[in-house]
Image (cartoon, rainbow, N blue to C red):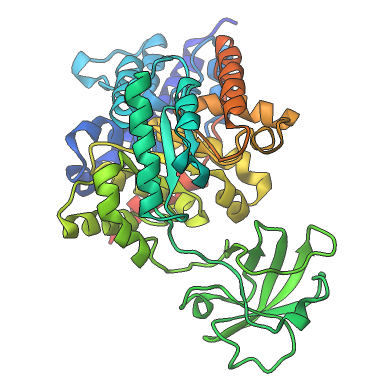
Length: 496
């Protein structure tokens, strides 16, 4: 294809507009950048540049660049401004060396490697992600199992503080340290804060629950049944203050979305929920099932009183703390303040993205995380899938990966990896494909199950095979709503 100068100049003009858009948006963020740890300065700059690119639709430009045999800017999340400049130079533009972005692909790769090392340590198998294993209560008294997990590839031990107690956690940690010393295998300790538990508590007498739930049926949400005069089912979400924040038309999901309803009417004390879908036949409502409010702006603290009581133990024993149900940057500030109030060592934070609000606020959350030298992000796909809808889970987890790569932030891919294999000893075909995709993350989390050793062996084999011929596909960059909302907020702030 022979290109005339007019066509080349048109492409150069589009690229120059993109470059200027990137630089202008970064220049509008001086206050936030000054508070970021010096090791993240370039990463923050690249994140803003990438968000600026994803604020606009460049699909036509990408196709044109691809036809010309040039980079289409896809797979350049970690060094996006420099990639734009490199493409421009191929088309004849010239730069002084001082005008070129210092964030090259090589420098971005080294930056991320350094952060991964700070967070997870040294990986004995350099081309594989780290592997995190969720501990079961039975592990507390089974040194042999823990030793076997280490020998079969576990790099990080996950202790979920929503279960058991400090005595049990201490026994688990003792066996981990002992097995690590005996085998020479390094193992980091990751401890999950429990977070707020929004779960069903049935207030109605049991006789009202004999029949199964059906679409069209009305149930009630209330903190207590004092104001309910109806004979219909009444359940509490278990946390005060939620009911008064609900609005008509918002969805309610119960039991991992198996039950879906819509709020028909609400006041400060109660809400009527019309059941719109029941995914399992003859399903009966039970206590202690999760409740999600994906459309509601629920203002409750991600840090509970129980979580606060766990912080001294975590400070003493944990390398990483998983922060559940983060929704805004203020949640990170609150956790820092609590550690500082105790005047104790602060483990590295792992920010769990598992709510609709966290996805929308991800750029701001990443910038807030950059105030610490080392932190990571977990894509907690279980709750996230319920919140955003299962049909969008694949799309959203890709977007999170892109933004974290742009920010040079290590990512943990979590929830239901080879779940059937772990529980029953037999993997599904879709799980094998999912496990191959997990190689895009820096660490993969496995849930607990009786076949964990087999899962470790299978996962390593899948990732080895896929990584031998793995190469990023060429993505087309439609605008991301996450990026558009963030860039729009910068413009709004500058106008006020």
